Length: 351
Image (cartoon, rainbow, N blue to C red; front, side, top):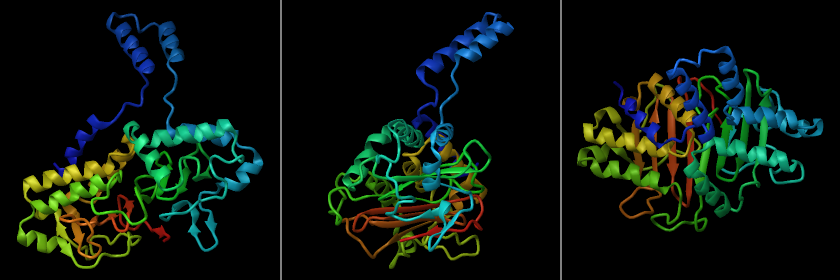
């Protein structure tokens, strides 16, 4: 079994999509079945009518879309393949600090109900115990929730649509797997400047720094020869996350070369990276990674340049044929992510 198979432990970290009320109704239906009366057409119909459909971010995007007036759609709704001058395919663009459209979420452009819907869509994309942390990141970065912008591509409810939310240090997407081959609906960026633009060593209060701590703990487990292989002098540009495929020269030490305990800790690192996101996105990453050989076909690299934190490397990268997770910790955290099930997926990355 691939080492990535152990990522099933992530299930214990997730929160069920069912509300407590939905769970109790489902449990009630199971009880009826146990006593032999759930086969009644009347009871089946009553149970179905009493159980509300699960509200996903994708279903909420459809509700939002249907609430938009024509003048709103002109500003923030686009065709699936819409290209913008100097930006390329707008749906797939990423950058560390940008707005996909001009209207801000908390502006008068959106009604109060629409703003609530957008917030609900956001809440559905992250784990509940990460909401407060991401809200902190947005506030620390000068853009509390509402200061971002959104766009909708295609027609929600069809087989081709995508919702994109962008701002400083955040890109989130939901697409119901409309975007073929990729995880997260496409490449994403996240970051945090917790105390200032130039953070102190150890990145106090940075919500993402524990990811680097986990990666550096792997480096400390390596012997001298392994560390020499994993440590690279100069990092690539942070937005250089194009896939290299199997023929590319990927820097760092191969995960397949690690010992069993080192590989087990790499699973912990991967779990830490995926921790903020909803289970369906975690599952999609798992499927994409498995299609390209799992963690064993990835390399882990640490970079000497930009070494800020004593005993820990601020810039590191986990990369495979169609998987790039680039973490930059200097002067503050920027992380660029591109994951797919095959390496021919193009990238549209800005600064």
